[in-house]
Image 1 (spheres, one colour):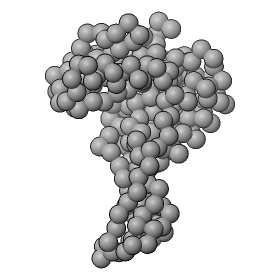
Image 2: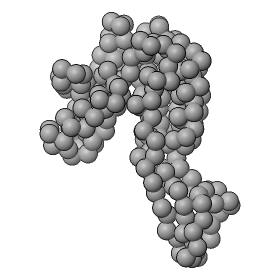
Image 3: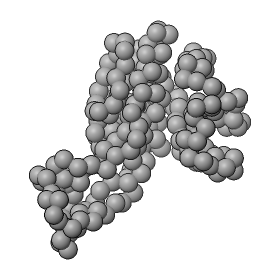
Length: 216
């Protein structure tokens, strides 16, 4: 069985050296790549350029921006057969459209390094949502998709609403975790029937995802 795992956070450039980024390290995706590889799956890891890499030898490709990740997903899924996508990458909700420098607007990214003496403002616009596109990109009409949803101090109602949006976007299974409870509850798996039992650590999460994949 062939598995595509996306991992790490996107970076959106402001100029030649500055970026808008998120806190994702890619460690979860790298660990999942190792676990799936150990379990006998053929793994392709599509990860952010500055993210944590796997310990085992898997096929790797790299991305930087949301557009890079989107293009790579399209190329891989439309030209190769994958049975499962584990979409763990932290995709920026916003991309940099323009930079106002000393009152003059410039299309982003600017060339070179902006002077620290300049007065700057950055205009962000919503980035592309990649998860809803993945099944459409796939040459395999039976592709299964695992999505991830990170919340931060969300109420049970807010979590349910957030997860249901991911399921409605095409995910068959959602790995939900909350920034405030990560040390005691690593994740909760959701499907169309609702949430499962809380999983305490990454090893348990990996075991459940591998079990899900083997049952396909």
